[in-house]
Length: 212
Image (cartoon, rainbow, N blue to C red):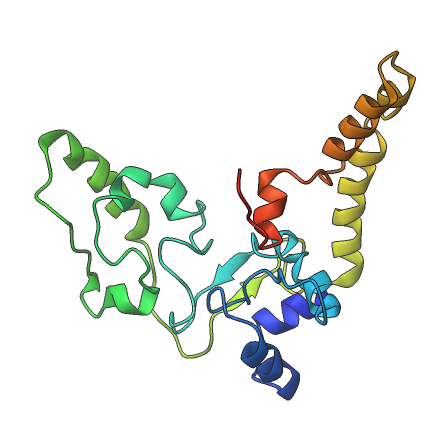
């Protein structure tokens, strides 16, 4: 996770440029998930932990790295999830904060004229984003929620992950192996619990989609 944090908040060091050149960027923060089975095991293993990092808050400075709708920069949460109806009404859904902010404030364009029943919802959305203080000098950075200063700490990250692992340890595994069911059923249920069964989702992740 430390290397993911360094990459996301990187300063274009040599190793970061190598990763960026070798793997397809998913957004301004991270590369796409690695599905190639050979030759990339190190970065694939590191990249698989991105879900533990990407929900961190984003501290906005110049706004060129933070997507207005997609990234978790607002104090109330992800705006696409908070206002999915308004999100479907606007154009430029992939826009960055710097693209939507002007000296006069936010600049949103809608796909069509609003219906009467949509007006209040849009007003609530505008009131939510209005307190934004504007852009500042500097690069946008991830703000680590496990630390009051927003600084990533390995020991704190370990504790957070250990809480998740403890939940897995407390899962009633004995019910799988002690139940009076065929052994092959127990094996299959165990694979499902470990998310190791070759379901369609896992096949898609590996980039090996075949005939259904």
